[in-house]
Image (cartoon, rainbow, N blue to C red):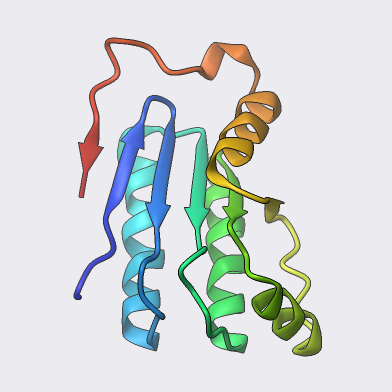
Length: 132
């Protein structure tokens, strides 16, 4: 897999990581996601990592970088679906993921984004789905 799909849902972008990320794929995701936030004007990014079973310091740093870069572009980042083993590994590695909000699942993550960004950023019928 050379690219991880980025879906547009109204004012938000949804990324579902279905594979364990290797370094090049993680860097490509970082670049693609930041470019997509800029191109679409997205106000929030939701990253679903429920299928990720292995995490290292590089992956943790990439998630932190994505949150920092998207915040500069006026978007919030929420990571959902983190498995307990992944959370334990991140803590053992000393990674706090500052600036990254977390939620248990996609539904709660979307609700968190809508709460953080206000009701004016809810999905509308004229917002087209966008995939890259």
